[in-house]
Image (cartoon, rainbow, N blue to C red; front, side, top):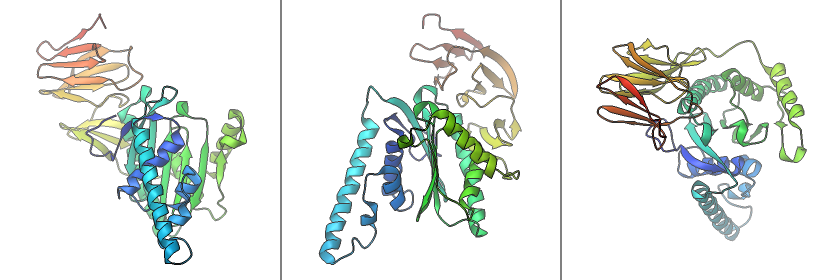
Length: 346
């Protein structure tokens, strides 16, 4: 997925083979580009399993200058290998792999890799998790300032459940907390995870490991028991978070929901499909079941849709037309006639 949204660091369309290696690669590239913190031992050894990270720390291996120089060359070569591998992962098309569209949100205390299936990708869903990370980042900072949590960054990987096996991993190392989730968690579940790391009796929690052969029923019961045991009644309080703005329209996360606004006035449309577009003095708002035309805060036209609501669709705006759908277009909207036309030959 290419994007013009400034909130994304590097959303890209990739091929999901496998999710764990790709998530490691992309965050490694981000680090090497200087966008996030230094390379962490646990990230590479615990999650990627690719580099002997303890040998790559500043100062090199234990030993004399020759050993340090050899270690430096070893590390440089290993890092180059990771970069090459990541670039290959970005471009290779493997027939047996499933598509994954990744979005990356990097905050002061959180790096999030958010993966949706390319066949069911919604940018509004990615923006919802951008908002959750902004809120969670402030919550983490507050707990660190109070001394309730060690000052380390959270590396969070959220993966669509249709692209991977069911798993839930909570681990930590010297330089970070590591979270792998194979569903789209609520803000309260994310808070529970942060709170768990702050407990004095914390210990690694791993569900659905490949080597364990744990069946889905057992794994899901363990995850359910985890949240029943560690979830508290208190919630995170936050002000509405704006995650997108364009042409006078904004998208906010407030009270657990996404909502559109024009000039700070909320609109009734569900933010569960394409982001809105503007044609002259009108806006088109997209829901999974409908498309609305709005002018002067009034709905002046509407069409119901039921044939392509499983993912974001292609939309092209022209001076007097908006084409909506795939290559052959499902619909076209005429500004002059304020009318939708169906393409019956698609």
